[in-house]
Amino acid sequence: MKYVSRSCPVCGSSANIFLHLFSKDCWQTVKCQECSMVYIQNPPDYDTLSKDYEWNTSSANERKRRRNNRKVYYFFSDKARQIKRILRRHRRKEMISIDSLYNSGNFLDIGCGNGGTLKHINKKYTPYGIEISESLSKEANEYCIKNGGMVICADSYSGLQSFESSFFDIVLLRSYLEHEYQPLPVLREVNRVLKKDGIAIIKVPNFDCWNRRLRGLGWPGFRFPDHVNYFTPKTLKEIVEHSGLKIDNFSLMEHLPTSDNMWLYAKKGSE
Image (cartoon, rainbow, N blue to C red; front, side):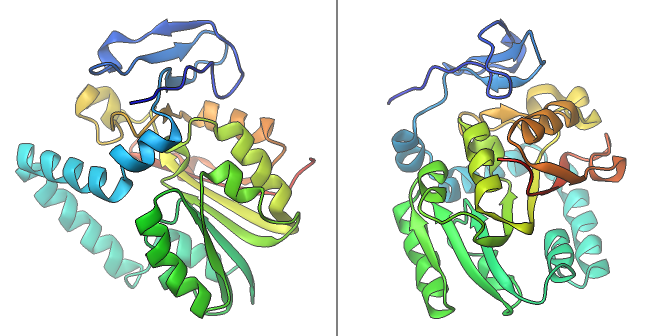
């Protein structure tokens, strides 16, 4: 197993505090003394992450473990999600937002997995994806090629460099940025590939939520070692601004302390 030793992914500072209560096994969770970003200091490298901690497998195993330990909690949680889906007519929140934005365009899903999201976007968009897993990217690519797009099998930073500037109308980073050990360079590339009126949609776990404060390591946002960044509204806002992207919407409703997750919408900014 190979590791990466890194400084703060937001501000670059190497001054940090070791958080024993939020660390597990060999994974060292720290808090930056400069900007308060919480992150795993020694995450696995891309090769280890893609082979030993493939998202589909690790996610399924973690979900099964949590459900076995808290059956009553997840019974009510599932019911709440079912109600939300009915109210949204079985459409995800980001899909409702996306469909109202453009009449057509190039759509990129970073960390697209097997293409589950790409298969549900409106046919008016040309689907593209980046996925580090060979098996998952192959499945997603078969769908995208049939619909005029493609999926690149690579880490996200390298994959983004394969596209020309101002190519995408929409870039989706849904449940992705918490996995990326170099999020700032990736966001700078997102800014480069966005069109002038394009938009980036970011969803990450909210480390500042009440549920995390109540449950500690039992919070579902903790996933060792594939969740390597733990953003608060403050640190998410800072890293997006450092990348050159311009925040379009990050209202209180998008990062309520009662929610485990938060959403941020950003436009192309200065490069």
